[in-house]
Length: 154
Image (tube, rainbow, N blue to C red):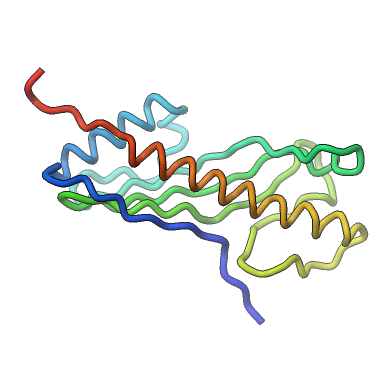
């Protein structure tokens, strides 16, 4: 009964833009939106592949959820071709700020099915984390869709 890692994917079309210009624009986005040297796992202009490890804070309001506060780590895989690029956001992994049994780990497409002492809370946070992951991916897609690729004529 294996479950797949939660993943979101979008192909973004940018007519008449070369692979090199797309690559440069995406690299600039990473430079402006975080520590790209820490985040970049793969950075290959020739193959048009960029893979980055990013994270966002996670917090669910309510006293009973404070032990779940922490981070949602995720991987962004970008494959670039002339006129288009594919963005895949995957490997969402929940971790807490302090060492805690409330760490839910890798998010999958299915429901929460791990053994737990706080099962009802874990299920609610699991579902909330999946919504947060979708929101993260949707916001990234919008940011990449709105990239302005610079021309050589300045």
